[in-house]
Length: 136
View 1 (spheres, rainbow, N blue to C red):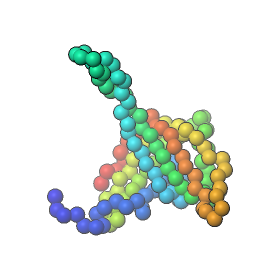
View 2: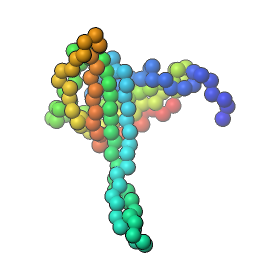
View 3: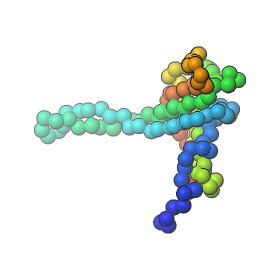
View 4: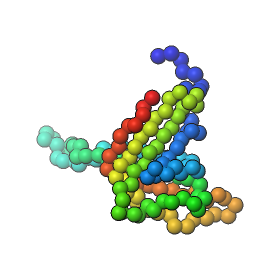
């Protein structure tokens, strides 16, 4: 591999988030993580325990500056919520786009403020599945 140039890196400045097809234009941070779920069982030999993988979860979190015009109904269970996260490297040559389906949110901030600070809203939850839409 050739030596990377400084504009080959991802710095997050071009990151974007869509909730059900609507772009959250003021997103400042977003993350999707796949985590293994384990169960501890007695080891077949000895007195210890062994961790056995029993599944996985896909977790999501995002932060955006609140404008008041966002149409995010985090607890609307009547529709299947999908998210798309995208990040492009500094040079604009490489983009990664990830779609999360079956998203459920853990909490919805109704109001939050702090003097002399722009209000930020945080969303977190889990997804049923994910799909890479673009990796390069």
